[in-house]
Image 1 (cartoon, rainbow, N blue to C red):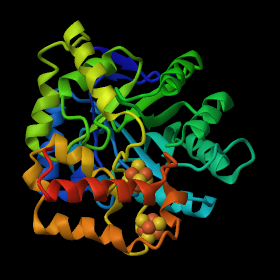
Image 2 (tube, rainbow, N blue to C red):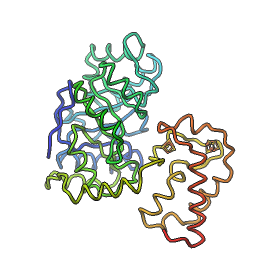
Image 3 (cartoon, rainbow, N blue to C red):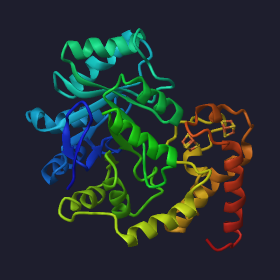
Length: 337
Ligand code: SF4
Ligand code: SF4
């Protein structure tokens, strides 16, 4: 397994890390078991966030008494220094620790710099030893580019998968040049990519640390198996990726859910990518009464535009939803998927 050093932090870990967002959906006992299994299997880096409900508490319970054996990153969505400190102290309590290895400003709308209260609070927290390193996460490429140019952060977390654009790949290279660690989120592009070996081989070609979102033991087993077999890019995997890219690139929804809630309660993060999901998973799962009802809600869209202002990929969501609905109705009427 390749080792990755996260830039100036000098944190060096196997290139196979744990994203702790999905464990909020399972019981505390199951989450603790999963996290400990990940550690026993070789994972050393665990990423959580204040915004992931009880994820920090579960991570804290899993690694209580062995804090020095793992690296933990967390995040705050605070917009004021008061909220920043409140969040940081809550994170420390829940994680049962007196320091967080990397604390990140979460999904920022712009790059905060010297003089901004949030950045100043980060510096103070580092000075006090409550955080070891200052990180940031972004979803918009322009914001991420500003962050790299600012040279103020030790790590950047950004979506990165084999569907990456040339601009995304340049961002990774710029990060390496600036000695800024790159933490790759959404390596499966929100569940759209299903070939874990291809996803892993792609990461292996770059200086990035992928954090795989894990909820089920079977998913974890798949990622842990890569500690045994060394996955490298091959001609066969490259051809597979090329074909998948042709099929998926363009205007597609990554399922992140940042656009929600919808004014009329459409489940945008699934309905706006139904055409892809229905062709990549057993289609019957998406043809239940539940999903038919959910898809039909698209007809209620009032074009308020709220969702568009929140989508980090700047998708034209109402139109995308309508296109998916047309396709879905044709499938219901018998069109082959
Ligand atoms: S534009 Fe349509 S899909 Fe978007 S929030 Fe408004 S009602 Fe919902
Ligand atoms: S439409 Fe945009 S914000 Fe909403 S789930 Fe898809 S990618 Fe995310």
